[in-house]
Image 1 (tube, protein in one colour):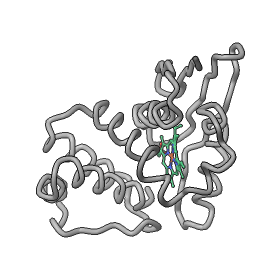
Image 2 (image 1 turned 30 degrees about the horizontal axis):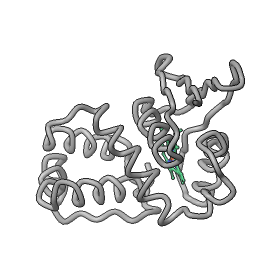
Image 3 (image 1 turned 60 degrees about the horizontal axis):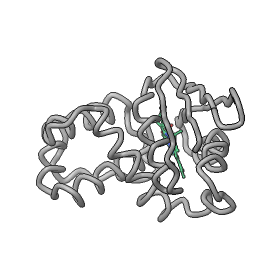
Length: 173
Ligand code: HEM
């Protein structure tokens, strides 16, 4: 997984819970307390997921709660700073979500070993979108947290419903 994901996780934990908690999580995951991640660095998936689970332990929250916090922080704070260009021309949660498959392909195309998630879209009616999740990582809860974050960013009250391990239903208001 790209280091940028862990950069964002670190920023979120430090900003909301303090540097100590982040260092404690790093240590708990078997890493140096002063570890830093470069955005384009290739971090082994098991290391990245180990750190996420250490963050949950240290903050005493579930993976779903961490996924929601991460999703909101990524979409509303972190990505607007470094991926501003991908928000341009998007005026709604629907516009943004429909760009996600393409954005994951282009934002990782120059990174060796990146294996971004892919999404397929199926409209059930004009307000109901099913997003199929294609990834070997099984992080559907993170996907749900990120979609909820998109709803917050565009100030839209989305219903986000998990349909299993590989699909999410999004109902637009
Ligand atoms: C500007 C917005 C976004 C950018 C630039 C972005 C970019 C990225 C990048 C670079 C990765 C790491 C991929 C890798 O290491 O192979 C990633 C992971 C991920 N992204 Fe996004 N992302 C954005 C928003 C979203 C949204 C809104 C969703 C929800 C549909 C989403 C779903 C995911 C998931 C689930 C992962 C975890 C990796 C996996 O499941 O395989 N992302 N994203």
